[in-house]
Image 1: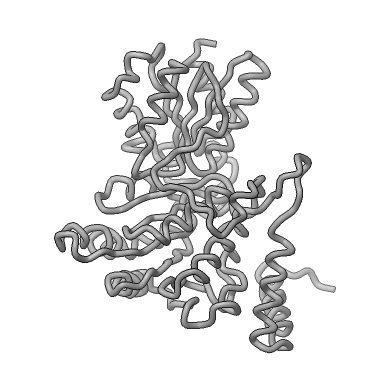
Image 2: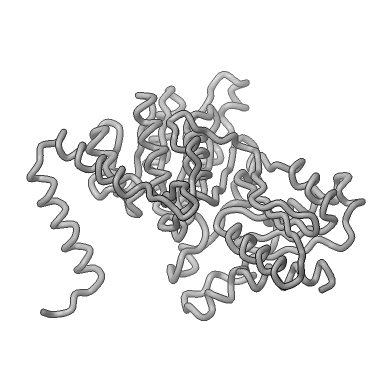
Length: 379
């Protein structure tokens, strides 16, 4: 049998899926997809807690909000019939129908304007970008229409809209598909910006974003979609919501504070384990969760305890999230508690390389965080 290319395999799988679904009625297809999602969504870990992928946590959060509020709808490229480019919206078309889950043409400028208009009319759109790099086509609608209208109307015209999709680098997708926009959107008055790390973050924050009356930029990570995390019983409830603007201490420590967001939190956790194992250093790891509003008090209190700070992000070094944290620490009482200058770990000052060997050098990992931690601690 001839070897199939990845494109051919994808087409073959799509064809098989269509044949499978056409054998069922629409209600049966919806029930089938729902059961498939339940079966694959949760598994038990060694500790007895349930584990769930980020993809399924997002799917569950979207489904719960679509079910809760008829004004909520999902739209974007391939979100409906194809079950989403990353399969985040799997089964939602079958369950909620074409009125609530809407495929769009490939025109970010057009469908973002449509969604913002719907939000200004009182609906609650959830708009998916295949990548936030493509949202640059719609930057005027996001910044000038969604973010500023509430202020410019004297508080009379809210805009409840959620912009979501993968942000930053994935693997081998090139410079034009790898940029982090956390600092871009974090600088805009009128926008809330969240950047989750774990499955629990994704579920709790997507629900909070949809319910928030302000426009929210929800920055996801493509590689994280397939990663599994333990999740609490509380988070499995349809009532579970995380507050926007509150960071989470993923690991408590007394010697150094590592602050990060999105998938870079993983490298901080790995570095913290190595620091304790090799040097007896107890690192405190803060998962920002929210870029704007930024939870400065949690960072300040941690620095007052540990006296050392390292920030970690995958964005460019200039004018980044880490730069803002440095400024906030300089302007707060935490500055007097520092025993060494703050160290920033960032992506390199270069458009993201396509070659894997160069791409691996372009972003911080466990070793980079360790190096920065040793420098700050004088180890």
